[in-house]
Every structure is written in C-alpha cells, then in structure tokens.
Image (cartoon, rainbow, N blue to C red; front, side, top):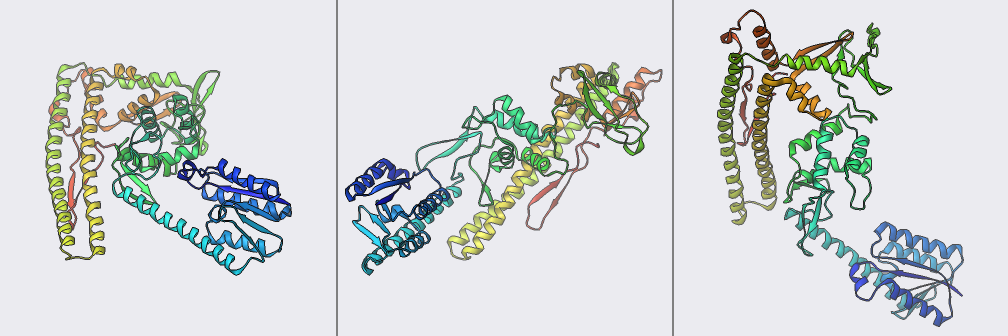
Length: 525
C-alpha cells in the first residue's frame, strides 16, 4: 500500500537538538519499510520556511494524497503534522471520507482512522489543542520581546541597508556599516536634489557599488522603501508607529523630509537617459514654457517646444548658453577695493546680528526644554505615588515627550540654518571676488546647477540670447560692479546694508509652553 511521509522542523533549536529533517526522514522511512508501505512521496518543511509556505506545503500534501488515492500518511508526532485546529479539521475530513485512510504517528505509537476509538480521537484533539496553545503562547512571548526591544530603543529585526547587527544573543544592537553607509547617504543626497528618478538613481548607485547584502542591485520598490525608512535619521517604524531609536543617525531629519517631499511630490522626477545641465532651469522669454534639451550627434541643443503657439524657433547649443552664464557670473566680480570692503563689512555685520538672534532664540528654546523635562519628572513622581492613573500617565508622557522632541528638532534646525547662513555669506563673498574661478572649481553638473540657483532668480531665452535675472543679493553686487565700471562713483551710503541679513524671525509660545520658531526663507528669492 502506498503512503506519504511528512516531516517538519519548526525552529533552529529543533534542528540543532536531534530533530533535524534527515533524522526524521530516516525514522519515517524505517517505519514505512517495517510496515510494508511503498513510499509515494516525501514532504519536508525546514525551519527556514515561513508560515505561509508551511501551510502551502501542508495543503499540497493533502491534495496529493486525494488525487493519487493514497490512503495513509506517516509522520513523527501530532505536532509535526499540524499545530492549528484548522489543519486538524482538514485531516479529520480526509479520514472520515474513507474508512481505509489512516494517519500514523510513529513516536506516539498511534494510528488514527475513521474507526479509531473515541479515546484515541480524544487524545488526538487534546494534542492538537496543546500544539495550538504552544503556538499562541510562543506568539505572545515573541511580541512581548519585540515590545521590550523597542522600549529599549532597538529595532527587533534586521536593520536596513547601511547598518549591521552586532552583539550577543539577546543583546544585539545596530551599528553603521562603514562599507555601505557612505553609499546609502549619497543615495539620499542625490534623490533630495530632485534631479533623479528612482529608476535612474537605482542604476547610478549600482554603478557606484551599492549592492544588497546578497550582492544584487536594489530594485525600484526596495529603493523607494529605503528612502521612506525613518530608521536612517534615528527613528523606528514598527506596526505603523514611529518611536525614538538608539542607533546612530546616518542622515539628518531635514534631509529625510526633503526626500519625502520629492517622493510625494506631483512632479516626481521621471527617468531620463541623459542628464542636461540646464534642464528645467531656463524658460522661453515669449511663452514662459520650459526649454527642452536634446542631444544630436554628440551636441546638446535647447529649444522651445512652441507652447501656446510661440514663435521662437531657434535651437541653441549648450556651450553657447554656458558661455553667456559665465559672462553673467563674471559680471559679479568686483575689482574696486572700496566696494569689496563694503561687501565684507555688510556680511560681517549681518553675521553678528545672526549670532545675537541665534543666542537669544536658543536661550528661550532651552528654557522651554527645561520646563518640559520638569513636567515629565513631576509626572513620574505622581505615577509612583499613585496620584494619577496609568492611562493618564501614558497619555501625558507621550504628549510631553513629543513636545520635548519638537524642541530638540527646532534647536537642531537652528544650528543647521546658522551653518547654511554662514555658507551663503562665504559664497557671496567668493563670487564678488572671483566669480568665474568659483564656477570652474565646480566639477559636477549638479554643483554648477546649485550655483545657478543661488546667483539667478530666473533664466530666460530670447532667440539665442540668454536673459539673466539675478537674485536679490547678487543684484546688489551687479549694480555695484556696473557703477564701478562706469564713470560714476557709487555712493556706498545709499546701497542697502540689510540685503544680506536674515528676515525678522519671530518666536511664538503655545499654551503648553513649547517654543516653535517660525522662520521665513533666509534671503528673498
């Protein structure tokens, strides 16, 4: 009589303590030979198989015995065959359809069939229920362990690409992977620029050497998942809840938010085979449509696509446009020492006012932080003294913790804004000295694009002539240079001295005492 063998190992511990698949298969084969069965097929499920795969293998086994009219199944024990009531019901239905069908449990010396005694069926049902209880209890313990791990600030699973796991069992933590972390950070920086689609970024990072831990290319869906993972800036997402993590951040929260803006934006970058330096930067002066760039025979041309019946039909070469942009940057370089000294003094005065504002703002923010921390401490004391309920404590603790986190984030943004302001001042001074030399130092097209965005508010194409509209700060430089080159001597007293300064930044106080500075853009335009 034909039979089917069914072996299962459900954990690594079982694999290592004598319950391996080979040992089970050997036991079942010996039993089948002893009983005179002919083995039709062996079904084995390893510990590495997921729950869905295990259920699929069980269903395949039942389908096989039905289609091939096999009347017996041999397995080691009840909990090797099934650990849930649903599967047990399926086995019972299969047995009750034909009195000749049997299930042999080798180690328990039990044969189950339609005509089995009520005591044997009772034992079968109890063992299935016990196995079900074991699985349910194991699930509870795993969830409890995961919750405790999260409370300690660590992710209870393998970290995303760019991090690696270290430490002993039960004390594992996540640290930065020195090999992959720089590439992951570059992935975020490039996508935040808005110049790359997911597909293009995937191809570029593969060329840079970024691989999965299996050595494969990151597919589009996987890369999008990584770009959306808050783990990289010090948070953890678990069951759709965001909590603080103890891992070292790989990127700033500001960069992460920029990436999310690009991911969710309506104008999400599309895949382009070619990257053009002036793509999206220049408008048609007549119809305001964006200039299209194409490559023919190794030469890049820009032209208007005749939006709203535009009459502009001239095609211009990229080198010719770049030459005109260079002339515009060259027009910012000041040779007159008096004008250069004026620019230097204005920037220094603006920087001094920025330092005063920054110090004042940080003082108020730290006062708010101390008040919030004091509330948390008092809340803890009230909880210990049983003056408040657990629900009230958890609700207020969550509220104060979020308030504290907001203040921390604001302090961090203040520091980053200070660095950007200083960087802007240095760029203004550099361009007022050696505009063309600064441009030539920028080797990558993206760096040159950032310089264009800094120096110009608008670039328009009128035929083959480029019209340059300087941004506010650089317009003042250009006027100073123009006045210097003319016969007129510029009146420095009439030039605006506040053009390089931050706008007035207010700080508003909410009812709960948290401070949230509201900052406008650093410079007009």
